[in-house]
Length: 190
Image (tube, rainbow, N blue to C red):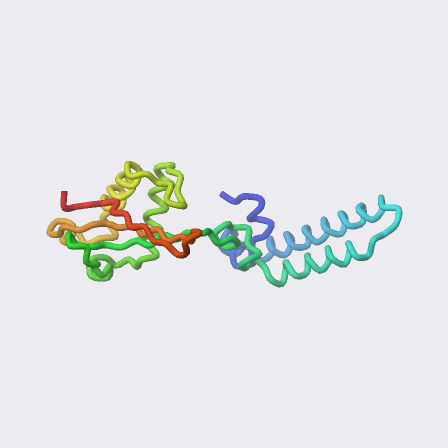
């Protein structure tokens, strides 16, 4: 499903993906339509002003040109994860019963980034609010079980033969400085 906002800022490669046979043509017409609408807006904006203000016009034109040149890049993105930085970060890991880290590549084809995507996907699927460690122990247990039950990412032999913990480290900045809170949210040993 295409959201109108994304359609207006879509790049040429996105249009070629959305419309394989004629994406370039649609992208050109879209940009021409946006340009025409911009000039119509400017015409009516200045038509109803008693005294034209060239500074406003110059700022507007500069903004439009820079937007087309820069495109959808940090920090000019409309996607929240690309235009803002939260005051926290989560890091996920596996550890054994003695809390020694287990290298993820030994038990899974996924990297650490994909493990965090599993976490956030599970939160989204269960409609659990997250961030700033607001997930409670009950919800973390649900998420941990959901991640482990999605066995496409972890070696089934490891699941059957090992006692391990799925950990979340919550890094944040407070008045005291940089802090870390560790939380086990799945325990296969019990």
